[in-house]
Length: 84
Image 1 (spheres, one colour):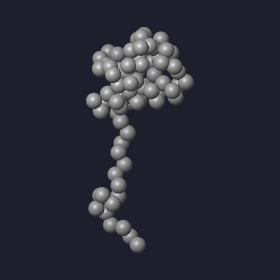
Image 2 (cartoon, helix red, strand yellow; image 1 turned 120 degrees about the vertical axis):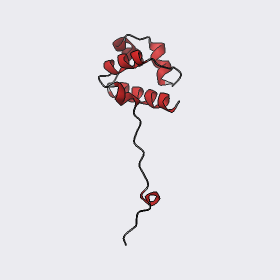
Image 3 (spheres, one colour; image 1 turned 30 degrees about the vertical axis):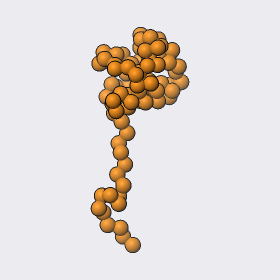
Image 4 (cartoon, helix red, strand yellow; image 1 turned 90 degrees about the horizontal axis):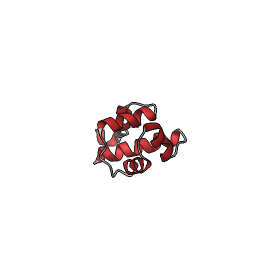
């Protein structure tokens, strides 16, 4: 379910960056507004076809919508030496 939350957050972020409402994204992707809402809340299990429609509407790749942020590793946990 982590991927579903990542996908939801990425859609919401990209949609807001474009200044779009859920209704606008629904129109641009050919999907229903309540379906978009369910996706953004992490309630929907989205098909690959619909991922492609949403990505195309948002002018990005499906891969970009599915990739989460890269975790930042703490230098202290890497066993590195401190100079000083």
